[in-house]
Image (cartoon, rainbow over all chains, first blue to last red; front, side, top):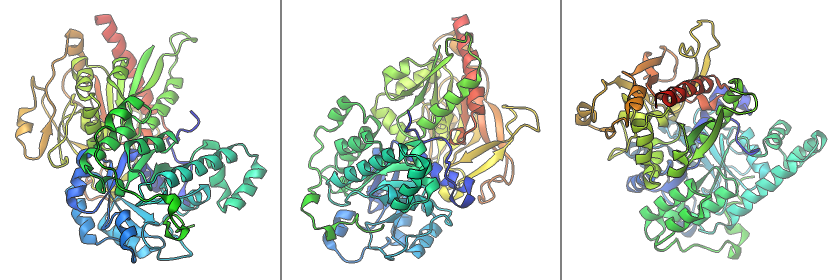
Length: 307
Length: 265
């Protein structure tokens, strides 16, 4: 299969081969798994028992950030530490786009991954964090190939779709994944000269685009995120080529969080088996109510943050 | 033809399959036209039943164990490893699952498959910030001191904390330890399987002092590769390198064991 992620990362951020191998390596260990947003230690335990491969520790899930408004920042370090002390799976936490001091704080806390996330209010409207210098690995969101490769060139060791967080509507995540796939397919059919021009158009380093074109996939692990609410949504993203799934508000804003969490975990492993998907989708109770992305103003969308 | 499965519930299974393919190309086939091996992803009991050997990859051991249980695979896996005694290799999370005893598990413990009479300590080196890659001499691979070292990647890795004596039944003394979980006992199904179990655990590699400069826990001497009969375990990730030497070594052992079993059956 041409779309396998090769066992070594051709990509070497600033020549730090082995450091990047260790950072991108953890993302590989998360593949085929579900990473769940949790707001306290109790939810983190539910996620762990459901079979989550990692949890994202935050004060408010995106659905609440959306409804409550105001500035959304890095979570209280005490909350993150209490979640780290409660579970044995990796713990991730979010920093604002461009807020490298929040990243320094999260690294000092010892979190396992930082999500430089559009779900929080951006702290810098020109620059993303320069991520290669950190020892802690980063995951970043993207809407298209250009965003994905720019984040990787800044040092991100894992990519996710932006989707539209806190809506329970998977349409934007699908759009972002399909956009990335289409652009990679286009690049894969280009000559070297065309690739150079395409690299300028996408505003990405030529070498990284060339590597992506050869691999016919992103050169790092790529998860789905933003709007996944059901086992079917999760399996849809996997069948579109994602390596795993983030579920934010979709679990703990639903009727039966523990059951839904387990069902989504099973759906991500058995994403190609509709019989299993039918079985795990039964009697899950109410899904999160959700917001239809088609009825939102562009200004309300979080995915437009970052570039 | 030998069918080698890679447990594909979660984790770095695709990496193992890629390196197995590379390794198989370096092993001379019995007849030029027929390949020696085929490699398959295993998610169901049916897929497992077709395998002569199995790799349990790196990933999150708690997640793999929970998904295995819910997919009806836990008991078939225990039968594969401990009743049939078929060749099985676990890396990182896979090593944890193949241990008869493990500690620092999640609250409430976790299910183990077992097969290796050892106690494994999860996340021995600490969190991701303590993960590291280092060049190791692996004498089991090549006893020559000048052999090319193996780039070994340790990610939130476990180590073998204690080698246990082999027992009929479960590891009772381990079961009495606080915060330690043990695997249920299984009996090899016949004499051939008993011979596969072999004797005690062999230590194949330890970590030299100073390998993990960032990590206070890496004082040297940590056991990172072991074998007991049909079961092989490494606490690091050979699947995260472009180097198929350990996969080649293991496939050769698999061939020997499959041949031995078929001649004694």
